[in-house]
Structures are given as structure tokens and as C-alpha cells.
Length: 303
Image 1 (cartoon, rainbow, N blue to C red):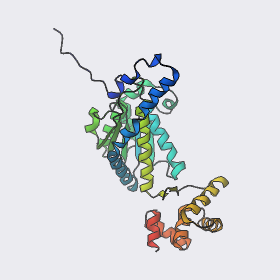
Image 2 (cartoon, rainbow, N blue to C red):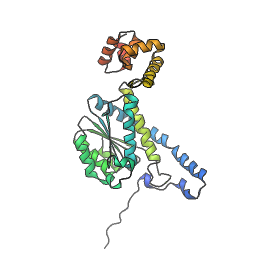
Image 3 (tube, rainbow, N blue to C red):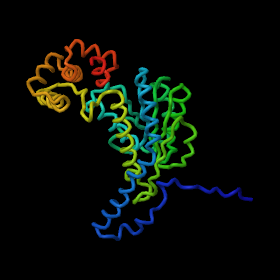
């Protein structure tokens, strides 16, 4: 007697997309149009989860202010998206290199080539989390399907250590949504090429991570108005850029900005506070220290 029939429900990213049936029979321009039409739905999927992304920002800010870190755990395309996002933060915002820590199933080699078995290594994900995650950290899992074993292993281990956890998936109904503190379920639907999550699912994850990490930097005072103010002048070109930012932020002429930056030993935020408030560099630096490096708060302290 045979056992009960097992019914497997495919994740949204694994279902066939009716709009791309017979994709291989279409003219080149029409193939591109089908892909582009599908891509138009991604921003809407991201807009629907902004409240959850905002909650994740708050968790990250709390973690970083408490001396913790933010970890990304992912496999395949999802993991690579996390690596790229984390790598771009220090040069853009002058953030410490260990604030955002990406972990990719299969290690560095998986960045350039597929190591398919790595994503099934639940024990490997758990071990990596146990090795590097601390209770004060936030651990963000990246899994298009929402069920990648490596990612789930890391999330479970991190939660057992007392860290806060979040999962970003392209399945709003992923079973693992109840295993994390915060779930971000993106409804990107079936891919144009069935199961190819390098398409809409990855685009949505990239948009979410860029918005998430950028907003974290804004909340931590590394942006003034819409200007990057934690750049380090490591060459003449970047020093010129610092002067331009100071001029934009303060409305002061170039000679005044140059003098202020020199007096501040190249520290853009100190020069900015000094110019806007009219205070001496030493007072500006002290105000920034008292305000946890928040420029507007430092200026208010000197008013």
C-alpha cells in the first residue's frame, strides 16, 4: 500500500510566469520588453515592505550604537548582493569596515563562481554564525526562496546566541518567517525565466539593502542634508571634493572652507559645524563628541 501523496507547493520564484511563455520564440526586442515590463513591478514590491525595512533600520542603529555589528548571510545571488552592499559602505560613508559583515555560502570563491552545495550546508551556516556573531549584533538573512539551509542555519544559531535576526525573502509566506524577529517578505512573483532569482528577486533585495544601509547611515549622522560628510581625504581629488561639499553645505566661499578644513585637520564634520555655528574648531569637535557625531545636534548645542 502506498503512502499519502506528497504535494509540494513551489515558492513564487519557482513558478512559471504566464507573461513569458514562448520567450524563446520572441524577437530580441520583444524579449527585452517582457523583461523590462516585469522589472517595473519590483519597486512596488519594495514599497509594500517599507515599514518592515524601517523596523530593520531601527534594529541596526540600536546594534551599532551598542557596539554591535550587522551581518548579512546569503547564498548565491542573494549572498553576492549582500557582499556588494556591505563593500560599498566604507568608501561612501566612511563607516568602519566591520560595521557591516557579509557572509557568503562557499566563501570568497562563491563570489565568482557557483558552489551549489554550499547553500545546502545548514551546519556550515550555523558554525559561521557561532564563530563571529555576538549578542549585540543584528543578523540579516538573504534568501530568495526564504528557505536556504545555510541562511536558516545561521539565523537559528544567531538567535540562540541572543542576537536579533531578520530575513529578507521573495516569498511573503515563507515558512521561516516565524523563526526570526523581523520578516521582510517581498512579493516579486514568478521570474521571467522560471527560477532565475538573479532577476526580479535579486533586484528587489538590492533595492531593499541599499535603502536599508543608506538609511542606517543617515540615522547615524553620516549624511547632512543629502551630502556625504564622513569622507576621508586620501588624495588631492578627494580633498577637492570635501571642499565642494563644505561649500554646498554651508554656502561659504571656497577660501573659508579651505581654511576651516585645514584647521580641522581634514575632518569634514568638524569643519562643517565650525563654519555653520561660527564656533572654533575645538568647540565644534567637542560638540560633535557630545552629540554622538550628529551634525545638526552639535550645531544646536553651539547656538
